[in-house]
Image 1 (cartoon, rainbow, N blue to C red):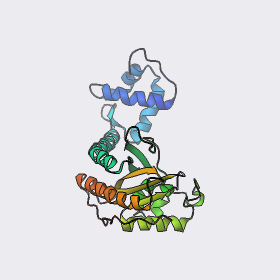
Image 2 (image 1 turned 30 degrees about the vertical axis):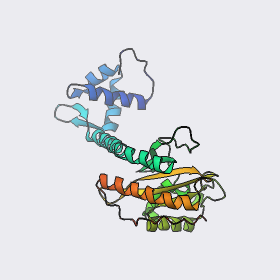
Image 3 (image 1 turned 90 degrees about the vertical axis):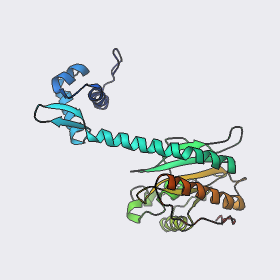
Image 4 (image 1 turned 45 degrees about the vertical axis):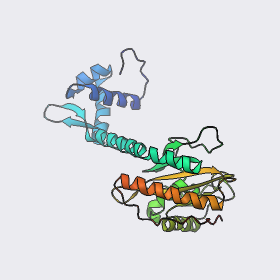
Length: 270
């Protein structure tokens, strides 16, 4: 924490200050010294340390009552590094996919509560579809979401899908439980998912799962563009290169992409 930097009140900010102070300390540090560094009340810092210790982000040495960063911080850093590795490995494939299809390319990965967009590539000076990095993936209304969760059980899907409130974004949005399960099954069978103007009118998308080293779907890669350009025949051709990119990325990440490679036949847009 920089000297003279204005402090913002609240337990969250102080908790982050605690982690930063422990991270910059040359070694284990006691409660009183930590409170002095933070210019905070001993009791308040002690309560925060108790919570952070319980969650694994701080480790307390009972023999001398000092604190250091815990394994939870390492796990968070590992997650960040894995995602950075995913983006770095995917970027050349995304650019190639963009150049081949002429459409926007997006990469998303799974999180505990659903998917999130990690990266995108798009051609300059061409009308494309924007994907906001860091935004959540709508599982039931996007090809990205369907590709991410096409092999999940109903029980696992309940963690990311509210079956009683599948929001209708357009007249094409799937809002029926059984219809969505059928669409996910079709996605798993053919190796790619479709979004036929289900999230936005005038926009179509195709995405394919990326398999990680443990055999589970880790991410999805896909394209999106105006429906006027992505007709049934064009999407059929794009599905081939999207699946090829997903297969290559899976292999780079140590996974086995065990979906069928599609033909370039026109797809059925229902």
